[in-house]
Length: 241
Image (cartoon, rainbow, N blue to C red; front, side):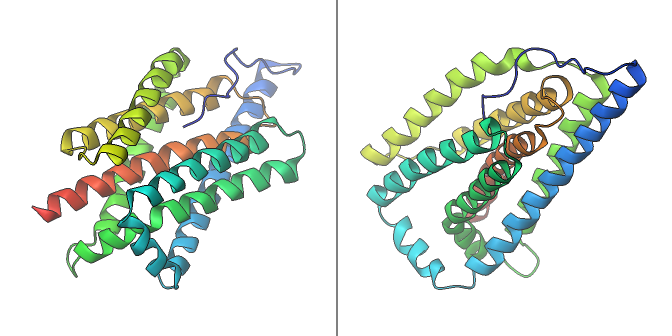
């Protein structure tokens, strides 16, 4: 869920079309390997955090809208820094540091919601597992659409920015004034996350340079995390009723 991708079509500086295609295929392979690594790190961190004293702090944080505002502010700040490190730095270690920092930040942000999901889960109804499988299956389907059709979804950039700013303002207002964002909002955010996946995958296919696989993986991870968050919220809401 980032907007710093290249918006001009990528042209490989190679001698033959075959070499260009091979280079692009290698870039896409590296991107998805790094995405898989980021997801694996996220899962490992959550497994540790869910069984650590940090879970008690997360439960206390959930009861305070002020704490959530602070966390949201820190998320924006650190997320912006991490994204800039991964996308703007020419140094590979700095890019990896940005990706790792973003994954750690997401793991911390997700902890309270995962605790709630664990509470409503049962032996035959593992909400976290269901949400994870649903998110990855949806991601795979959307990725397949872009790879099969080769369509360029970069035209969605402006619309995604406008909607995202509106959503952020709505979330802030709900925290400040205490009103609840209902089921319709959650479903709308899942659709928004799907649009981000189409947009980011399109950028991977058409716009990133071949040395930007770390930043491409970060953008995809951010969109997958956004969808996972709201699929979790949807399943929790359905299990509460």
